Image (cartoon, rainbow, N blue to C red; front, side, top):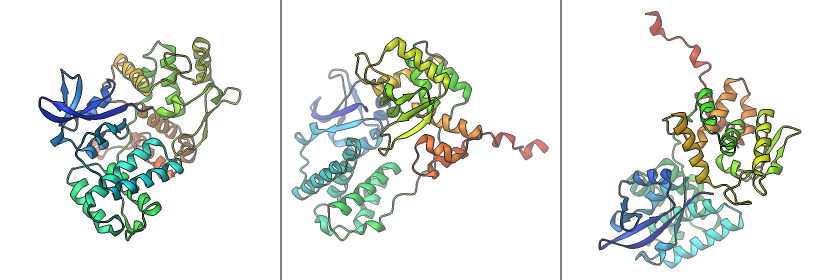
Amino acid sequence: MKPKVILESGKHHNSDVVFLIFPKDGELISAIKTLGVAKWSQTKRKWFITKDKFELSKLINVLNEKAVIDTSGLKEKTNIIVPDEIEHSLSKFKLWMEHSRYSPSTINTYTDAAKSFLMFTYPKPIKSITNDNVVSYVNEYIIKNRLSFSYQNQVVNAIKLLFKEVVQSRLDIHKLERPRREHKLPNVLSKEEVASIINAHTNVKHKTMLSLIYACGLRRSELLNLKPTDIDSKRGLLFIRQAKGRKDRITPISNKVIEMLRDYYKMFRPRVWLFEGQYPGEQYSEKSLQNVLKQALAKAKINKPVTLHWLRHSYATHLLEAGTDLRFIQELLGHKSSKTTEIYTHVSTKSLQNIKSPFDDL
């Protein structure tokens, strides 16, 4: 599960501030520092942002994929009054998403995004909102505050869903344009780097977790949600259930990994989850898994900003370089669209390394 960042209004050195309360986490701290306005209080032992510099949308933007943001501590203590019309629409929107079984993370993200947009357009009645208001919001709020492409995309998705399912208005959702996508290449490790990361640990559980992520191209949550019954050792298959997009999929698992899992199982005897925390039946935490990788990088003396997702990218790229068809890689990764998988063709070096530069002929 994602760590939670609790926002709480308060006073610090006679100033109105918003405290950020969360378990110590290097990744979260680094993300919060990028805002340029967060400070650490030695006396309160908390991070804080002064009210005049606090912008919830920016905080959501930098923490969206890293943490769940709890704003309940702000609602009762701030002077920001949400008009009844907006509150009513947001409540209906949230209920509709819950009924449609959207994930809690998506519900929070879309609700906050829709709220930001509706507060921007207020006092214009919601049913009178048009596409021009969306354009103004993007230009005067998102672009002006240098918010990311991904945040803009989330806002547009939230607006489309809100006005399609909850609000009947003059806004034409079919003409709403999402931002042009950024074309960032995935980060890939060499096989030697992957081996050094995996072999850095002598702890059997830690080594097995990192090995399974790379060996099967798993997402972090997919690894943590595995149960012992998801492994079919006789057929050499791993069942990944209700992954991203609530999809099940099957991926092959090699005898080498199965033997590693057998040794791990004999030693730890997990009860509910394949990988459990300090107490029997307790699911291993995302934060602890991140620390496992962090320790491995330090031992392997790798200074790159490697994340667990790099192992998944490396798995896909190494499969492609070994000649595996893209269609199979798409199935193994659980990608809905083949276009998502095609990005690995841009980071595969097998063909690029055979190209001779004209400089060599000078």
